[in-house]
Length: 130
View 1 (tube, rainbow, N blue to C red):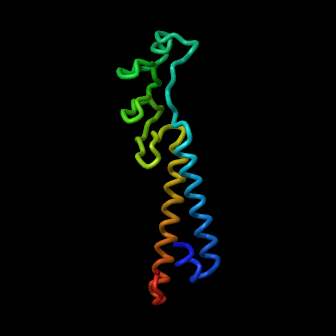
View 2: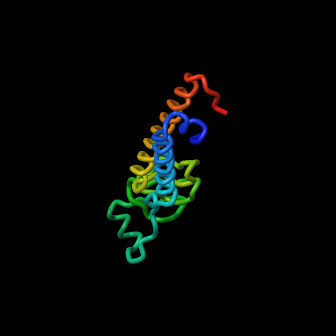
View 3: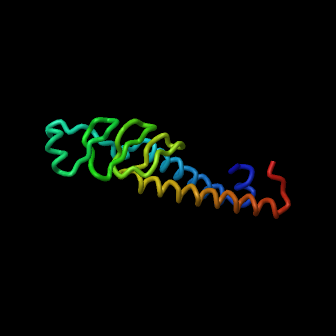
């Protein structure tokens, strides 16, 4: 796409398209490889003490989890402030990844808008995209 559409428009379009594609790929990688806030067993704390501190016992994991945590049935773990399980990244989006996920979505939307605008510019110039 970049060679066939962006380059005929302007060299700057090719550079901006390449940079935005790399930024989207980088943000995706950060989201896909980051810990969303998985709840692990506390090695030095007793379950009873954690339950007294406001933790809730997960019926599936059988682990005490903080009040905001929920169980993800796709990953089979509890995640702090679970937003959803993302099929595109293959990960849960939770407390530690929600900001990265929103950055990824913003960069992806900007890149798609860039591609649509370039396609329209090239189409209305009357040149074939192939």
